[in-house]
Image (tube, rainbow, N blue to C red):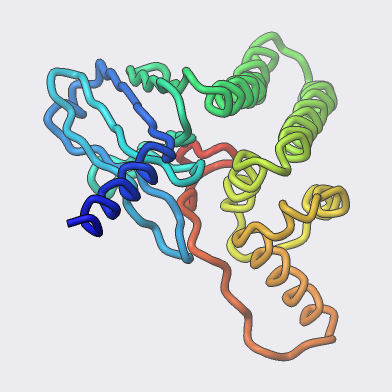
Length: 255
C-alpha cells in the first residue's frame, strides 16, 4: 500500500512540474468549420503530431503538457495551413480570416509574427514594383528608364529582406526561432547549398545553433555537396531531413 501511495505522489509531483500550454483559436474561414486541425512538428527527421482538435462554429482549442518549447505548423488534415506556431507556456491565441493569420499571446509567438509582418511588408513592396512597371509603360516612359529605376528598387528590397532574415536568425540563435526560420529559409532550395547569406549566418552561429539537428545536417550536407562539386568528393549526395516547411517561402507562406 505504501509503495502505491509513493508512486502516486511521484507521478503527481512530476505532473505538477511540467508546464502546460493553452491555444485558443478562432476562424471566420467557412472551409475550416467542421474540419480537424493538427499541430505537427519535426522529430527524429519525421513529421509528427503534437495535438489535434475539431473546429466547431469557428472555434478550436489545443491544450496539454509541455516538456520543451516546440515550433510547430498548423495543418488541416494533411494540408499545411502555412502557420508556424510556437508551442510554449502561456495563453496563446490563433486568429484566422480571409486576409490574415496571426498567432499571439506568448513571447516567442509575438516576436515571430512581428518578424513575419515585416517580411510580408517587404514582399508587398516587391509585388508593387510589377504594378508600377505597368503604370510607367502606360505613361509612355521608355523601358530602359523603367528597368533602371525598378531594378534599383528591387535590389534595395532584396537587401532589406536578406538583412531582416539574417538579423532575426542571429538574434534568436539560442531559442527555437533561429533554427525554425533557418529551416523555412532553406526550404526553398532543391538541395542544401551554401549561399553567401548562409555562410554569413554560420560564421556568427553559436554552438547551440550549430548543434540543432536540422541546422547541423543541412550544413554538413551542403559542405559535402560543395566539396564534391569542387572535385574533392565523389560519394552519393547525402539527404537532409524532410522539412515541414517544404513548398513554402522563407517564412512559411505557400509558394
